[in-house]
Length: 204
Image 1 (cartoon, rainbow, N blue to C red):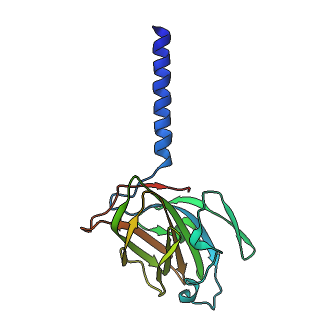
Image 2 (image 1 turned 90 degrees about the vertical axis):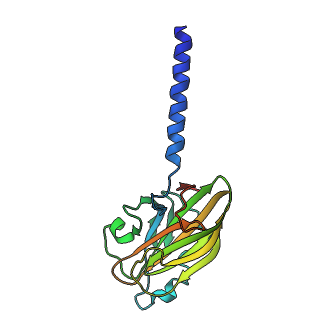
Image 3 (image 1 turned 45 degrees about the vertical axis):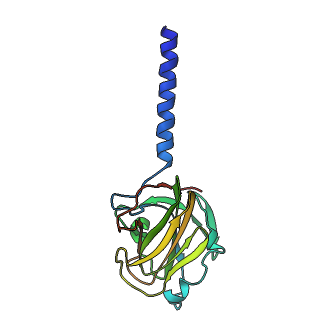
């Protein structure tokens, strides 16, 4: 009986360990639906004479629409090696300068996240904000670009999308001309309520 109990206890502890490990692999949006967990690459220096409206429509990384990075991946841009890193925003928007602990003017940054859905979620609204210019690739498709300098205003731009069953890849590029460098994103349902019924991953 003692041996049987030991086996049951071991199996229970193993199951608990696996459950915790599985839970650690997945993250969730915050209480208002904002995505706070991303894989970040920044800063990418831009020519000072090149305005953000031009930069946001150019590729800083070849094939950037198809990016699927994970923490620790390295890439060389303009002779400088940069490393992708996992970040969790401390508020409902991410702030490149705060995360980097430096001020970066005339720079581009990328945030990538992986959204996993148990089933298709059609007819959602993607609500986006950026300071300054922003561009979004959704499952490899260029779906959004904002080409003017502006302060951050949550949910400034909205567009209709559908999350497919399985993993959805979001690549969010933000250009900073000067000073603050930020972005935010969440999904809303048809009634305008935050969508929170999906998992967030930080690797493909």
